[in-house]
Every structure is written in C-alpha cells, then in structure tokens.
Image (tube, rainbow, N blue to C red):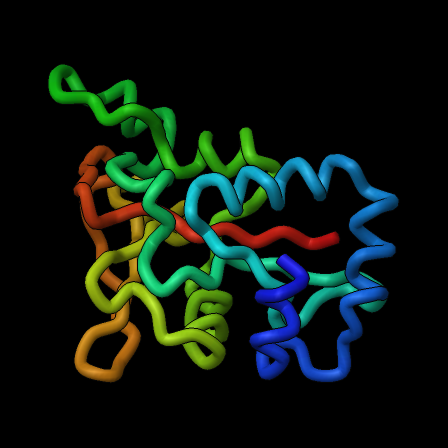
Length: 169
C-alpha cells in the first residue's frame, strides 16, 4: 500500500505516508478493512475527499470495479426478493462486513477526478431512501469521457457490476 501511496501523490497532496501509517497502526479494525478492500481487488489509497480534520479517507482506486465484489445485488431486501438465480451477496451487506461504506454519487464523481475508472464495469452507489423505497438502486460508470448515474432494480446483478468503498481512519 505504501508503494501505491507514493506512486499516486496527486490523490493526497500534502499527506505523508508516515502519518497515515501511524494512524493505521493505532487502528486494527481499519487495517482489517483495508486488507479486505485489497483482497477483493479494490486497490485502496488515500484520496482527497473532504472529511473530518485529522482523518484520512481511503477509497477503492482500481481502474475497474473490484473483481471480488461483482455479481452482487444492492441490499438484503433485494437479495431476499429474488426467487431464483440469486447472486452470492449484496453490496450493502458486503460493505458493512468489510467495515466500509458505499460511495455516494458526489463521492463517486470526486473519485473520478482522481482516477478515471469503471470504463468497462459499473459500481453500485449509496441509494437515496426515496429511490430505494420504490425498488430501485443507483449505479455509476464512466463512458465517453463522462460520469453517468443510472438506475436499476435493486435485485439485479451483473458480472461487470460491483461496488467501491470508502473508509475514514
């Protein structure tokens, strides 16, 4: 992770790895979450999203949606509603188990300013309650040099759709 951090200083201008490392060493649960992000293909790195003072924000910076988090529907309700061909899990539950949060639309757009990603895949994002209450869920991708936000039934899942996570330490 230190090598990725040093290679991509544009994502975290003015941040020193020694400070990040010290913060991580004092937070075992954050290390566990980062390990899960890494093991599922997220390539987490410190990014410049706004956060609380004194905290570092990590985000999945992989070029495509993390491979170990694809083919999932949106949440438990969506998973339970499928009668057949159920996916292996849901984005919301996987994120919670990993100790991370799904990106919001605003966070996804900010990430795209740092890393052009999801040009062949797409990622579920945190869906507002009014959309979710109607059975839908939101996802994003990047095509034609632009970021797009779409909707789908929350129970849907695709081999090329996963989710990206955020961790504040």
